[in-house]
Length: 492
Image 1: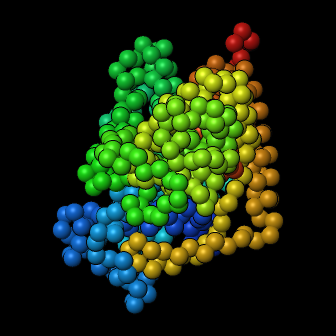
Image 2: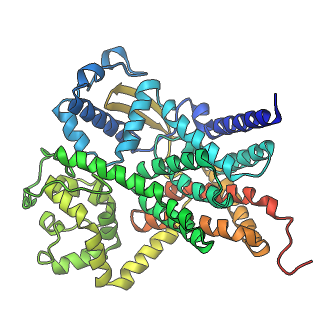
Image 3: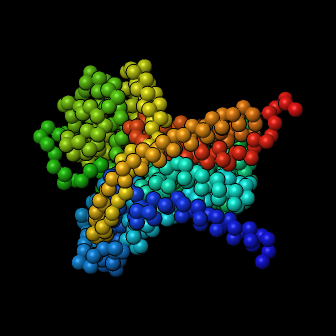
């Protein structure tokens, strides 16, 4: 066996072992970890699959197939792809690609099949980040990252959270290799980045930030073609989202069920508005909810409704004061608004945000900055749980969330806080000492700040949002450790 073949086997074996390390919470508990939204992704994916089968006439052939892990008497529940499924698919408010992937993988081989590819790709990216270390050194560095952070809980989770970290790790891999990748590796990284953007709408601005940072670095080095190619995953993902919105528009999809009951006083104007094309089809008005909780938007709307032309004025006489109330409360916007109004409300979000910023820039800017800082400091588990899964049908699942053993999560969060703090200090010292470390550390900082702003200022601060990416600080400190022997500039 040649040395090159042995080297490849060593790399594959190392990635395989690291994948198992990233899956330890799922292997220990017997099932992937979960969040309160996990079931919604599975069920939305089932509705989307049913919609596709119904539209293509394949529902009779595939719609009632067996479901892995489902009891015999319920294996075909919900199959058939009828009109209800078509409506549900068109009204799905979460990422269609991730929902479909989760549903199909889980139905085919159980919940573990949905997290195994995510852990494998994450392990592969860590392996690439650790170059040019030898295989055993890469495995050791990856193992430290896995055991000193909460990374495995995200890699083994039925949620799209871990893919946010890919959008920071992939530009770091490209930068550390000076853009010299080769076609197979470049294609694989592009595919992984595109998939990571597609799994959640919050990943779109994160990808824009990290891709722009990488592009600027290439421009600074006068590598103009690579600066343009760095934006390719975002362009591809947006094209896919646009294509999905075309299908949803053709199906008459809106922001909520067409037959949803509406309380007295809910507006019904604009029902003739057609479904619109979108780069984030069917998304929830998360930014609107954030603006309401910050308070400035409520003051602006209270003073300017109904003459300001915003559709939200048709829906509420008294505006809800928290983001949870806007999205999930008894009087939430999806319940009160018609499908046509929901489409208009989503389309008007950015215009409303601009008007709110103009109305009181200091108050809104201060609120957004505070939310971003709060998000940076929150790196815990939030509401992540161990879980038991019972698949009831193609678009129905029961996930019983279970509390972890007492003291486990606080202990892991303490270890992570100490590890991240130590790694951050090491990176700061390395930036001062070695110029070669400055660009990758700067790119890492851009990614972490962008993630905090997108999730904190545009949504709502939560531990899992920053927890899903903070492990990159530890990984980067270990990856750049070989640079320590180099002398600082001007020293002998």
